[in-house]
Length: 119
Length: 214
Image (cartoon, rainbow over all chains, first blue to last red; front, side, top):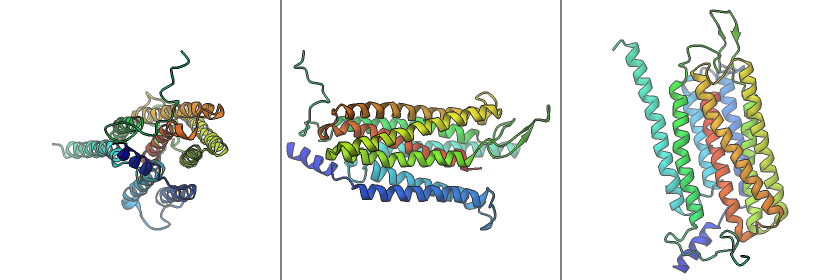
């Protein structure tokens, strides 16, 4: 038992270095700048500069957000290095949360479409 | 009386738990899992009511009141909230550097980065207070329309979480100042840091969903 605990402890403390943290911070900053730039060239003052991006705007924005979320969870919250039990305890409700949001959005979209069609 | 040690005061390198992991850390992760569900309910409410407001002001488009002729300007101001987002992201970097300092016994690093994290948190809350006040002056209140109700509820709860995080980090800062946060007790700061990162990842979702999507 004790040896198992010690191994887990050692594994847990195998965290990244300040250099890695800073690199991740830089990537997070760039991804945020990309989000705002994407908004600007789609709806802002420079809208249309790269053509009509309205159809790809939401998928691209959500992809950037998901990448930022994953980086913070993996490196800053140490889920990449820590016990997988922590990952399970956090990710399982996270999946339920995402499904709840998507299901409600889809339900409301269906309801609106049904109402408009006069059904 | 003095013989009774505080449960968090002494180092405990050989934890006798069934999982082999620190139960406090498992507890904070379980709590954060439940918080995912909490914010999912608020975010889904915002998404469901998005674009359903019958009267303005609206987030991205102007609106003229047909009864009075008053023109309401779009509410959302991207530059201000981008600064707030950057502050929160930087604070996540600062808190991991503070935790690194705590784990290595580098008190100067711990205090410096922890202080910077707290400052970022205070500025973020200040930004949100300014934003809320500004929105109310522009005619958006909790009762005004669906956007106002869902926006203030979602961002208000997030702001409350940030405020609680700032208070938690302040207590860690005081402990560090009193030299009561040695490397053996760095787990105490790690739990606060996990909560702080969670507040950050929630904002990573709120920022595009509420402010950028049209």
